[in-house]
Image 1 (tube, one colour):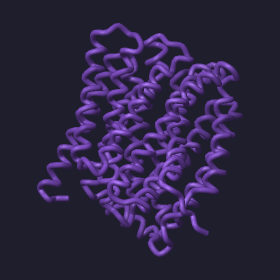
Image 2 (tube, helix red, strand yellow):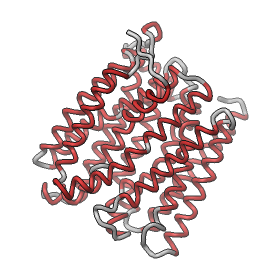
Image 3 (cartoon, rainbow, N blue to C red):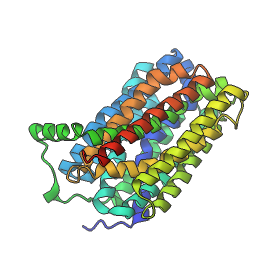
Length: 399
């Protein structure tokens, strides 16, 4: 059977699959306080539902890509969506926090399959500037869902209670299963598939993880994401406690943030074929430093209020989404025969940091606006230092 799919329809489908993981985070953030009251647990216990999700998400990132390199792209996505649906049902009917931890972890274990395998599908099918344009199209479409998710979550929470959020997630994943069954292409020929023998897998993992350029390129986007993820993970405290908005007001954070992502994706798509990867990434860093600097000034000198404390985050996410497609393609090109595994390990680095961030760093920084701003700046400085090291290594011919 032929699975020919055009660039834009494929980009929309892959974006929908990739958005499932972040959507599953953002949509239930407004319900943290209500979940805690209903299950009679402290806020930290509810926060750990996010950490359990992210740690499972990160761990399974190690396997989605390797499995897709061995058995093909489609089966990994379809099985992942099926298990995610069962886990979502478990969350919807959970009667205690321990059950929530379990099913949130199972959700996390499966939600990343579309993101990891989607990157490999792009590199299987597209080359050069076209690959960057498709990656940017995915970022553009991908940005819509996280903007809608917390707003939808707030509406569902106030109208029907927190469990309705997970019933809507279940309906969403059933839609994705149907769509993927009809339209998701298989892009990896049988002749190009890798072995699943433990010895071969170990050798491949080691070869990727010993590559210093890979480690640098995997950590750079993870740090960029961490810089604004501290605001996502701390959204209830940041918006409700520090800025004084209601549970309906999560759009004050997510709308500007995702608008920045989408604008940055448009810029990245326009830059494809016109600017080198290094110049594109440099432009992204200029915007990121501008956003972080303005946020520091606002945190120190402007009274807590919207929109002033959220607009600098929009500038930051513009820069981050300009950097992401170029850095990801540079990384995937290091291992043309193991793109799934490379994508897996990139995702693992990305979400391990996100899980640590959500469970420890973000709650600590969320005590004040100044702490959050300092965290954004610190992650950005680390990221640009690693990019400078990567550039130095390339110039020296050590890659």
